[in-house]
Image 1: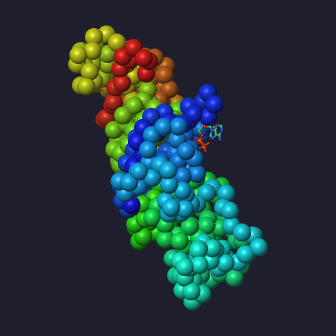
Image 2: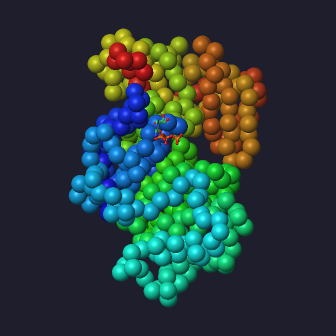
Image 3: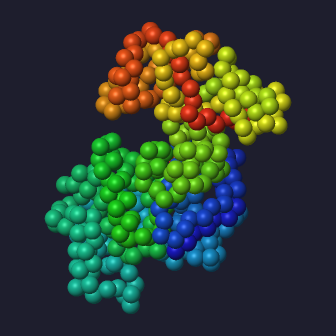
Length: 357
Ligand code: ATP
């Protein structure tokens, strides 16, 4: 099912939780709603589900206006951060619940329910704990059961609100890979709320980056990471070095360094900031007269395949970070306190057009 939201606004008293949000969620894709706490992700999810009503705007399901349809008619499955399994029911009965409470004429037979639950428990790889009760499960197992329960009623849309938020980092990582595989098997249109950028980039087909009730960017994980549309998206999606300076005729001057800013050739003398990811900085030994920014190596963490270098610019004393393959770091034979040259392989310059950057 395709989902579309058009010009959604939602106020809570004076506070604007959603401010003119328009988005499309393609059929069969997994979309991550990503943004900091309080940016409106959950509110948007609840509006799509029909649990909350927007002040204005529309929700279209398969092109039909569903704004006034009831939660049940929308056929959505939910999984929340705090798994709401029934403690007094076995895993089996928890998964069967949605089928048992269907109106009599739609209710499957006992045998059909048994077959369906068995199939779902196999799908989430937990058929071996069908007779246990929720308190006897780990957090990760509970979330998988919550997902099996949501899938039991064959929802047309699956909405997941920080489903792994309460779990520790290792289990989270395992479950997100598992969710991706499950999604590849089932192809249910799914929306996944998270404030964890790594999770969104790893799991989703498309990512919606939200900030203060508005959509900052919509795109594939690659496009939002590699071509952020705004400084907010740049900073939110990973570590970044900021080179402050002035932009003039397509060049950013920052301290003694000059960077190309090809998108800004018409700009005459405005404040600008160059954004460079740590792994987009090339690092070399210092050679006088070579282009690049002269920096002092403050500290190196060379553990695992990558070396993280804390650097200080000689011209402005600004601290910057570079990440290079550990092999290259070892090959350069660098020592703390040494002077190096760094050069951005890729830089994106944002210019202050009056509203601040
Ligand atoms: P989090 O990651 O912390 O869950 P979120 O991005 O999902 O955040 P929402 O839960 O959508 O954010 O909330 C958006 C804003 O609206 C928050 O500032 C929140 O306090 C406010 N808000 C949400 N629901 C209500 C409500 N029922 N009454 C008043 N304010 C609300």
